[in-house]
Length: 166
Image (cartoon, rainbow, N blue to C red):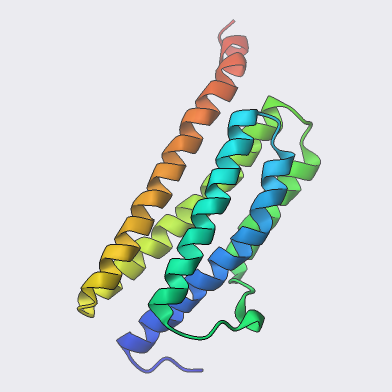
C-alpha cells in the first residue's frame, strides 16, 4: 500500500506502534524470567502491564477491529527484541546479564520514545488534540521507564565500578 497523504502516514505509523506494542507484550515475560535481580524482574513486569495498557489505548485511537494477523511488529522492534533474548541466553546469570538486559531494554525504550514522540507531533499537526494528549502521555511513560532502568543499572554496576577503580 502506497501512502498518499499525511493522514494515511499517521494511521500507518499508529498501526505499526500498536503492532510493535503487541510484539513487545509477547516478549516481556521472557525478559522478566531471564532477570536475576528482583527489582529488574519487577520492572519488566511493570513494563508488561504498562505496555498492555498502552496497547489498549492504541486500539482505541485506531478505532479499528483487531486483526491478529497484523501483530508482527516491524523489523526494528523484532530485531531489538531478538537482541535482548540473545543477551539473555548468551550472558552468564547474575548482575552482568541483568546489566546487559537493561541495555537491550533501553534500546527498545529509545525506539519507543522516538515512535511516540513522532506520533504525538503528527497528531498535533493533524489537529487531533485528544490523540496528541494520549500519545504524549505514553511518551512520558516511556521516558520514565527508561529512567527507572538507568537507576537499576547504576545499582547493578556499582560492584564493577569498584573493581575498575581498585
